[in-house]
Length: 242
View 1 (cartoon, helix red, strand yellow):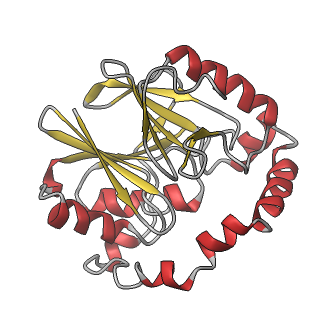
View 2 (tube, one colour; view 1 turned 90 degrees about the vertical axis):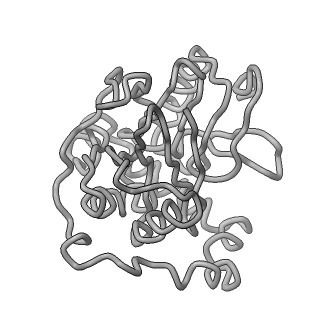
């Protein structure tokens, strides 16, 4: 099993190879073309081997290109059970929108946010790769083919388990590969280069859910974490400090 990281302007995309097949995790809005181009030209892999395209939650930088990429390579698309279902998320977490807006506003005034999202040099590195070769039909939104629930195994990839991890958002999930103890975490965990370790998200909708989720992930005891933003971290007990 191999996991390839593709860094885009907005988030990390991961391409997972296992037993001659592939699935893709998280594709940002308008970056499906870039991801396919990277798979073919930089990784030297055939997109015909992509069987599944999934996401960790329904923020646009993670779900925005999932359907288009799946259609482009004729793969199955799958998203979390509660994604794109605002009434369900509100029912399960009534104060979520208020907490989410407050933490988003707090984060927006921090210097790191300006460096990330208002940096012309950073933007210029990605301006030329938005969906070069996708036709209009591939970019139209269609409903996902599957919904992912806690404990479910990914179709065609039985070693990969869905783990419901609310906190950043109520629909958030992670993907855990038990044989290698690899965790693809989306925004549930982030990789901080300046701090040199994993951190929990600065934007969230329920701090109590974050605490429960961290305990749940600590019990899994992952060896390597592939976060939705930032660096990949490996080692023993890499979640103990959280």
